[in-house]
Amino acid sequence: MITIRDVVKQAIGAGYLTVEAEERLRNLLTARYDLEDLKAFMSLQKAASDGFVRQQSREVLVSSMSIE
Image 1 (cartoon, helix red, strand yellow):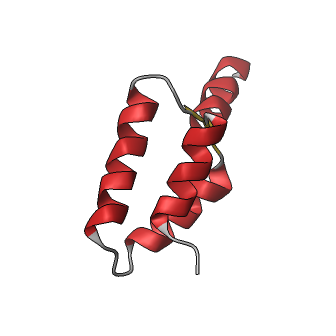
Image 2: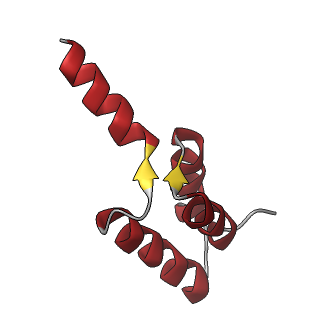
C-alpha cells in the first residue's frame, strides 16, 4: 500500500507534484495515517511554499487564467 511518505518522497525528489499525486494525497489524508506521514506532508507543504516543488495544478490554473 502506498503511503503519504511515498508520494511526498517522489514529489520532493522530482521537484514536481502532479495533479494525480495531489488527488492521491487527498485520498490518503482522509484515512488513518501516522505521525511520520503527517511530518512528510508538512515537509511537502514547506517545500512547495519555498519553491522547491512545483505544483502542476497551480501551473494549469495560471495558464488557463492567462488564456482568458
